[in-house]
Image (tube, rainbow, N blue to C red; front, side, top):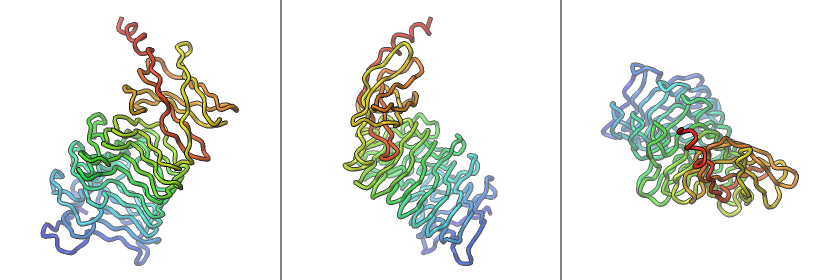
Length: 373
């Protein structure tokens, strides 16, 4: 490819349209080398539109979309960076290696999947940052809307990780927004941190509403996890909102340093599932014990450790257990955790809870001197 679709005068044009006219199949936009990538920026319309039930197996790889040729200055298109819609399926935005990832900045969403788009994968991209993955450029993150289903954001390996950070501004910003869309998975991503996974790079910096992941408007059976980092936002890490926004699962993530709640459930969301209660922490064997009220039989408990007591957080995942017939549970954990322990409850008929009460443990303080000797 290797084209410049650059329109700094902002004439009324779109970047690239891959549509259902003739059932477009197996098209490739860009590749994993600079010579084959595209610069798609400055258009009044969107960057790339992939549309139609017959439009399958499109690959969008290695492009710079919404920035200048150096990837360091915003030169946004008028709408989304990449828009997959109207039943388009099996699209790959990015790939499985960092060279296949795109760098995308766009005001209405770096990537938007909607209107029945399904089985699409967004992986290995920098979304909302510059080409270094260290500087936030504003714009929107990932939007999954209006009946889009069974899409995957991220992947099981570290090269498939998206960095979804630095979007928005003082008026707000979201890393991932799932609205009236079911069965989607967000896994292995950095959301609210830079490409190193350690430096803060929140979505919606300076606002009161910037959050990592928002699930709303009846979105159901979505899975957030495993192994996302969701941190540093001025509002919530995950906000699951709406009386019919149910059966959403949050598993094995690192969620911390979000100003309001690290996991927040609105009234009625996830069937109003109640967080578990931690009763005690044991030194021998290393374990955490607790209860559920009302009793949740055969449900999943995940235990976490964090550095602060409020708001309840889960910075490091420690282990998983299953409740007994009375809703009681014990989870075996590695040593040297703490100082604060929390837990979540997942009931397949409801979804995942907020974090539990926090228990302070001196296990870390007791055993660290032994290691230092």
